[in-house]
Amino acid sequence: MLDVIKNKPLRDIMGITWRENERIVRNSNRLLIKNLDNLHYDYSLVYPYLKDWKDLEVPYYLRRLKHLPIIASRGCPFRCTFCAAHEQWEKVWRGLNPEELIRRMEYLVNKYNVGYFRFYDALFVGSNDKILKFCDLLERSELDVKFRIDIRVGTNRNVLERLRKVGCDVVGFGVESGSDKILKKVNKGITRKEAEGTIKLCKKLGYWMIGFFMISLPEEIEDDVMKTFELLKYFDVLNVQFFKIHPGTSFYNELKRRGEINDEIWFNTKYGFNTKYGNEIYYCKDLFPSANFYRNEGELLIKSSSKYTHSITRVIKLHGLTKGISVLYLSTMRGILSRWEWGEKLYHNLREKYGRVISKMHMIKSKKRS
Image (cartoon, rainbow, N blue to C red):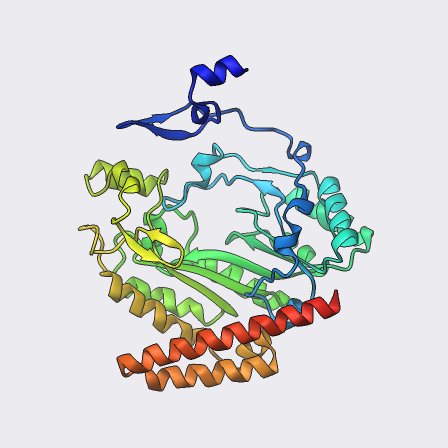
């Protein structure tokens, strides 16, 4: 083994894409592990960093519980052009066996007193049979837990009803757009009518709903954005983002064929926009001739989307009475102050200071409960 390491770069052995001088090298794919039950995640290694972690998109009554992130599957068979998951996982969905998932949840509840799990699966419901069996086992286990999953438009009604009964209080799903034209362009595999059907079903079942949408998708114009905004009012929390370009996606490859992008941009720290998440490449007219929105136009649209879930009832359910009133007050202030540049800066300074105070209060409460 040492001889191999001496004669080949270590990065090559790890099986990743890397760069040697001016040449980009990509190794062949490894075989996927068929049985995920054989992979075990040692939470003791990361728990010191997670013990105060909270999913801030869920209602206040859930935030009072002990939170922990978890994952039960890998992969997604669907082929959205903005996502690389189907290429990364070879268009295959693999999940833990329901018995193993319940065993792991029981262990984490007993060891860390977990009351709420946030599943980070790209597609939690990849097999209706497995999920229904999971629900049966969870019900029999008498585990007193709540959890959140991400679903897909068109998820089976029976599955959603069973999940709701056994503790799934929150669902998030990516609708992305309210325009059939755009949904077809990004190969989402759903229609607006189907999206409305799933939204209404989840609302009827009493789920807290988190909606994921994107602005400035390929060929999108303002009329398409307005169709998207018509759906926002149904959700309790919104995640509306500027569409960003990621390597390995179908759309990225399309841009490469058109000569609008190349692999060298990932080695250019000045390309794209510096944000709090790092250097990001927005699909905007500032960078791509084929885009229909400039960055500032898209961000103004995103900012305007917040009003659709800013009702008094939703804000108080999300933050609790004390913080909810403060959030509503700050929002009103922003509406007034944002008319001036100095006012916008003042608002962000106040919000940052307030956020730090609230975070400290939550940490103190968490320590007292534990």
